[in-house]
Figure (cartoon, each protein chain N blue to C red):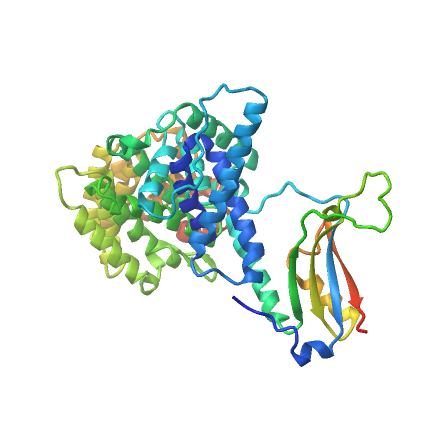
Length: 125
Length: 407
């Protein structure tokens, strides 16, 4: 099991960015990868991960269903389910928004027809 | 760990437990488990036992799916099928996995199915190829593969293979299973179209499946050993067929490129096949392949023995290809006229008469006998019917002397 040390100085020095995987209109759900293709996906992901290992603060994960908690009683629905918009998240460290965007773009399977990524700087206090 | 092979193992194990009628659910569950692995392993680290992880994930997915189906059927009061028995936990990795693989292979080789469908089903379930990958390997359309799979699965649901009578079923179906292995290998070995890597993969896959047969008590027969010997002896020479400039003629192959390990394996299986009182076509074909592998050079090949073997093969499994090959061997042993004499009076079936193989051999034999007019005529047909540019180039080069000496 690999543990990512989020307290290391190298990472705290650099700005951090929240990457949200967003499902875009026109998402293709039909094509199912074959075992050989899945093996390739895995290999590519590992390659990407090792290339940017110093930048990947938290590989995050997929998001499930959620609930909106508000001060006021919620207005009548329907709410768009959270996972329909944001499929997953991760946190990367980078010198700039551009660099963070490049790291996210390089992540296999993230940026493709029907899926994009939103990269947002996390402001330190 | 190879995902494709893991797919075959998992499908076989799970089908064994829930029955072949659920084969599609099983394949979906294995697919879901692999996707989960691809997503989870990079984050959490690879599990110590990847196979066990995949097995657990696929089992859980499958149980969940079977349960929700059972619930749905109850809700719809559609209890047409007998009560679905869903184990709380499917048995683990214990038991004999190769037994499961063998059962699955035999289930794929349902005799009432066309051979192409058996092949497609085996490539899908046991080899883990997708419909697109199968279509690319068998030179057919994805729609055709899909149609064949759908029909094959429907048939399997109707005719469930009785897994408890393994031994009787195994012996009864063994010949059919061997034949599918042979066809799979030939698709890789003889196909004139595919890329080298793709062809190699089909050959390796056939070797993997027939090795299962050879290692199982019930299916380890002399014929199985001979089939496996034949595959290794052909596989040994696969990579030498491709040079930098495309296909390489057999007589020009660099024999040092032949795979010594494969030859060794092939000869070992051939030795084991020499028992019992059945001489199968696999024995004869393996014997011919061994002759080639053991010959120090093209010229020093024992062509007379090869010609005899093809004659024997033609008696066991009559085929115009065996006759054609015998003529080629005779031409090497005793000259081109002997080869032509062997073909004299033979009416090839239309598929062979229209193929480049037939006309190329005739062009070559006539050319070497000095019948230049006939040689040119056959050469033109051979070039026109060559199935790929690589083969066309090869033929043009090989049959060139006819025009050169004919001036």
